[in-house]
Length: 161
Image 1 (tube, rainbow, N blue to C red):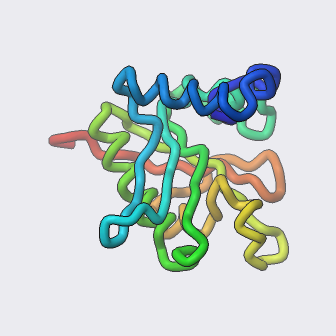
Image 2: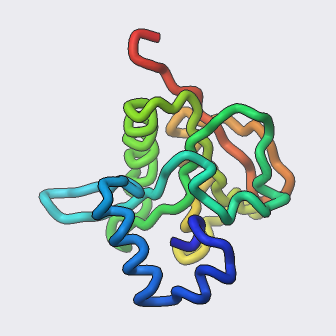
């Protein structure tokens, strides 16, 4: 829920309140993201939706829109510890592109971390993904207002296009 809410709203709903808010989203039929499975076990998660769903992006100078095109945004990942470094994030990005396309999106955007020293940061610090995963999934950098936070995009093919 962190990207969907303003800071004060997130703090007010901390814990159970935010959990219930996410459950309401799912119950009303919205799909807040996608899951990756291996042998029936969940191994990864990716949150995505139209950019305007994410209130936290509205006030960000670093992640402000690069143009006026409507985009879907990939804002969050979780990959189970034993599955990190095995391509789960790239697979989630590929499926995110299919999911967004099937919902009418023409552009998918993400805001990964790009470590300055080239070393892989601890998992807790890469919940927005790593730039190299976005590169591998066909995204290209379209903006950068911070040394470590590029704005990455993938143009999506529409049906018949």
